[in-house]
Image (cartoon, rainbow, N blue to C red; front, side, top):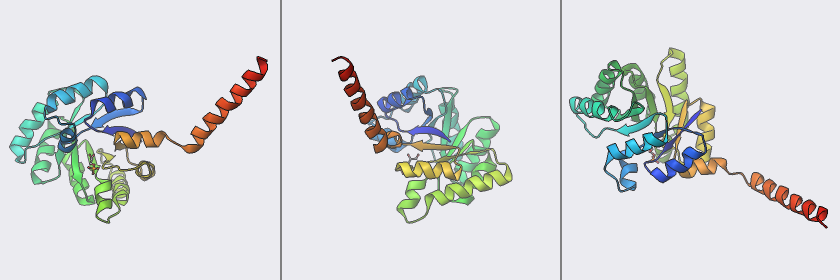
Length: 219
Ligand code: G3P
């Protein structure tokens, strides 16, 4: 499973990129607003200068003709930009046109297997089921990821599944077990994935033992 960072925060992206574990970034209008930024092109171009992988930027239009126009603009910003398009009739129309033009798309706000199948058939490069938001309303978000992966494999669909709306480290474990191609994770969750109390305790013990033996040999 590949890891994308789900943020529009440039500092977080720089920090995460140093770890060598991030192969893409996803943004959305809410993440942009959180950073107080509305200069999408500048943000996306800054991110592409840090991460050499797929960078998702979302359209704001709702009409298919406008969506296609906006998507073409966005995709011209950099070769690794992926256009994020919400599931809707207009969105599917846009995805199918963009797919024929070989423009990469990420079908977002996916909450059902039917939506995922339609996205794959329309030619979406990525399909993003929102795990946390389904959990929030008492549905099993990860069960949807597993269903989508199974059906895509059965039919040989080429769309990749991005487990999105990830809220905690267990979601990452479950996404990997479900066979998601990618999990897009907030920076906080990425840091939590690294941590284990036994690793920290083990490092303290190693350091203390080394200090003791080093002190003893210098006396
Ligand atoms: O990748 C989608 C993500 O940004 C949504 O996450 O936590 O707002 O449901 P959340």
